Length: 296
Image (cartoon, rainbow, N blue to C red; front, side, top):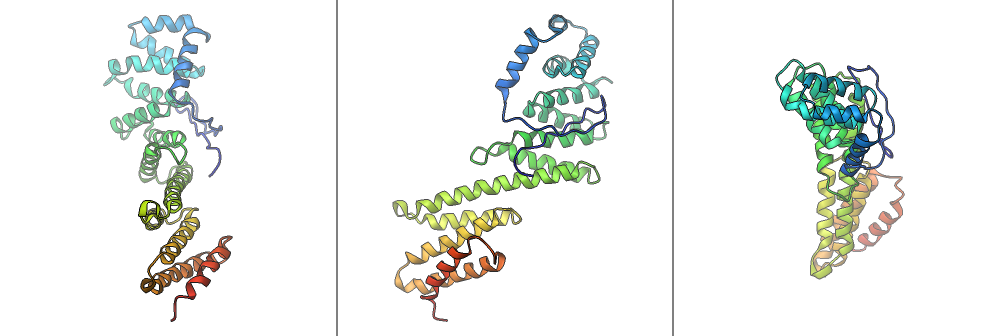
């Protein structure tokens, strides 16, 4: 699953359905607080909202939050629910309220807070009514929050961990395929980040007398080891071959036969794995040069 990410939503217990609207681009906390401002001053029912915020009646607040959620006023719902969460903890209403709070954050695209609340839910209620959904959405929200490869990938790692936990706990769920495809996409993103890092080392060459080709090769080899089924494996293997070649070319004469033998070993591995690769011509050119230095 590449390109735009499908945003999976299920409003159980409010309504039993599964939909996949398209995820908008990263609209983080600024967007969330802007929505909160709009909810406070512009949306219908703002007078009631202001009144309920000042109320000390937890039952009235919970009823308002349910109504606001049903009317898709998710920021209002999450604001009111977060206000009473500690007050009703341990009561018979706490389980539904915590799940609704998490789902309200999720619907308003505040995936970080939704992830925290969904995790709180399944940790407090491991056999709860919504534990399967909470485990799924905890991971899927982080998946939707996962940034571009060049940025910090902490949320990507959280998404993989949470989604894998969901699969482990609910292997027969009808959402397993969605979770697994999301994991594959996230792993590809991590592999691409490693490929970009390796390419950066390769481009540095012997800058400042450092052997950055060796660093490029090591990063690429580790990426293949960590993610052996990535769609970027071919590019990584080609980068390893090119790095070996650059190291061999720069070697002293006594080391060239040994180094070029390593180049040919990489070449044979590459063409065996990708005989019809669009990179085959470049690989063949490197192998032709290497054969001039290898006698056996």
